[in-house]
Image (cartoon, rainbow, N blue to C red):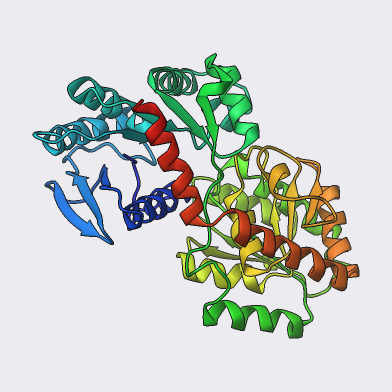
Length: 388
């Protein structure tokens, strides 16, 4: 169960659940996805062998973007629970797999009704998103729901060793109960084989003007503000420098205002949210994909960029530090350090041959270690372990 599932995708979680469900079904498992819909009634679909149950969108004037996220989540879960109870009427799943805190109450309800064990995947924590500052009521409440979900689960999955340590410490879990399964990648749109990806990559070599790419939700922890602050340090020595920002989010206006105040607004193209194919083409076109996150459980954008063969430079934090070996598969820089970001850009521009070698190594590793069939198989092993 997940609060987002294609085509209702807000971020990486929706794409992750979509790919995982499809590959589990391909492996022969009976997979039913319980998620939210946007219609007045529940919908039942079959998508690529996956049974999808979309809960009704209740007619309540509670908006995710402008109202309390807790009020929105409570309203959403009322609808999800009703759909879930219908789904398990006369049918008992072997495992209930809950993705993040927004489906915690639904998971607990269906567990009590069916007796099926819960497997919880924690994609991020509120403690991490708030950089440890749980001083306000809403972050504290979300943190408590995360803890409740994890402590009720028979097993907890995280996407990196960094996240496994964080979750074990924050929620007082036995480290043996927390499994590490890296996020998968390698769909047709990101594997580097689509024509738009090849065309974009070929154009990169002939353009002659440095193109930086940032992709991600426009929220504070993704660190776009640090990249914007780095641009004034580069504009004189790198004429023609451009930054494309692919993503949407609540900080769009603030980031655009920041770019104007730093005098670099004309260097930035705001591309908005891109679908997977368009994003893959953009990443492949980049001279450098910069991931300046302050908090990053895994670093899906970095992995997707590596799969297209694009060079990457990432903050030395969280799961990013596990994806990028400095000087071997990319570059790392200190978080919240615009001067360090600028230094990474200079290194890429000054050493194109070294940059190409790093990108090629990263692409080979990404293809070998993060394929979806392997991720689905490891997830199925966790399912089997909680039924014993």
